[in-house]
Length: 438
Image 1 (tube, helix red, strand yellow):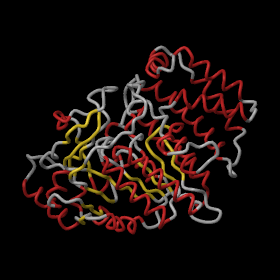
Image 2 (cartoon, helix red, strand yellow; image 1 turned 45 degrees about the horizontal axis):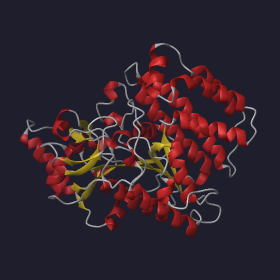
Image 3 (cartoon, helix red, strand yellow; image 1 turned 30 degrees about the vertical axis):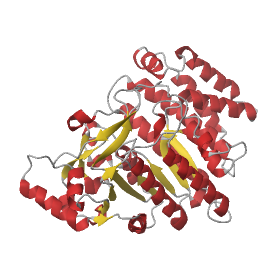
Image 4 (cartoon, one colour; image 1 turned 180 degrees about the vertical axis):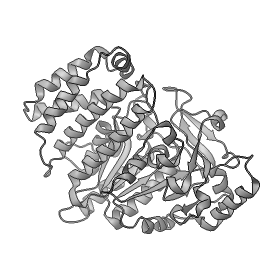
């Protein structure tokens, strides 16, 4: 929907939103979402940007409620496995863990560092650690609540972690792992150089990675209490997925996106398998990943995403919550690797979802239960998406995703005026991966 759409249709859309709009004056109103989640074992919590504090804070409060009242015990985020696993060790009080959440976030030195090395994540991690110490994961025999990165950009770091684990366990797969790592040596830890060589020049390490994956899987242990075994296996999955991602990225098309989102789903399933019958997961990712791709123009482009793949899986009961804002502030860069800036998010475009939510709520924070929506909210409307690279002056040309909102999410949280994240003083970020996508 845009400003040229039929006025009566827009009025009908606003009338429907007015009827569904629930003010969010305090965090206690989030209980409406908790109740609606019912017996879901996977809850997807989105965000309209990677640099808005309000999205992080409300997701943290909603996650706390789900952990305390419904026994959720896994947080999976759009971050790299090795860097986030260091924070997981901290919140679980594992041997050799850091002494503070700030220290445990110290591996986030690759641009965009602010996505995870920020005060909101620090505060939530401290809450998780305290909760785990008091509740021991929710009762006798229950694992502690874990915090995991399910993304796949850590090719070299994951390979190093695998070799370290195989050395420690004196595994017969160690020599194959070293051969695999050596195959990547000529590319000097540069993903783009490897992608060009593998995708355009047919000089890939695919054979070595596949052989190592086969060997490790052939002796895969069950997971009785061995989280380090899980760590090694997911790092191996990261190595396999990221090699395929960079090899296909330079060729264009949807394949690399699909590799990434399928990887995130598979990583989540490996973690849930480790947790066993008690596994209940909360996923923090951008709306472009957790909102069903079939309800957007992504489907026409041959793209799938986490929300779609999990909804299609009959073994899981999924509830997806989108997040958005009408206006405010955001942290982002104007190009990949550019200095981070606090930018102004302009008011939502007239006729967009953000504009309609602002009108329905009269400028208040609020939420809608889209499972209660009539056919009107199944029509297509523009829905804003802001990435780590952002140019506010040009957003009307490429930041609005045509979406059927009632098909994309089960509920939506609207935070009318938002503020930016506050990054922690981590080492200056290094921009090593211009192939990153949101």
